[in-house]
Image (tube, rainbow, N blue to C red):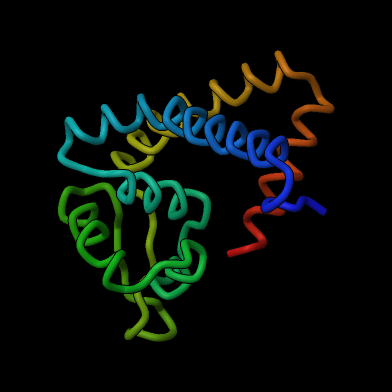
Length: 148
């Protein structure tokens, strides 16, 4: 176990890991952020497009659960994506009160452009680092995600 109060080496090592996480995240979001800004969108718009694209037909409540966000956080950006023709919102055939979400062709193209560049970055980094490093990275990310 790491004793953060008594081991300056551990603190420095963890600070370096946090810096790598910060700079890696900045690098992987740079291209999508530029594209989103040109459209007047933000990262939350990309997240919505990404998760609706991976979960076509999900309900709004389902999307809230997947993204682990509040209705207030999701409402405005989702509404804008619907208004701009990127996401289609339809009443559920069994429960008219529930809305189902799908990307339109326009939304799928935008999502692929945004996420495609990120997939390429990850593929290149994984290729350079090797399978063992990729497995270690996935393990660390999964453990961090479990803390949510």
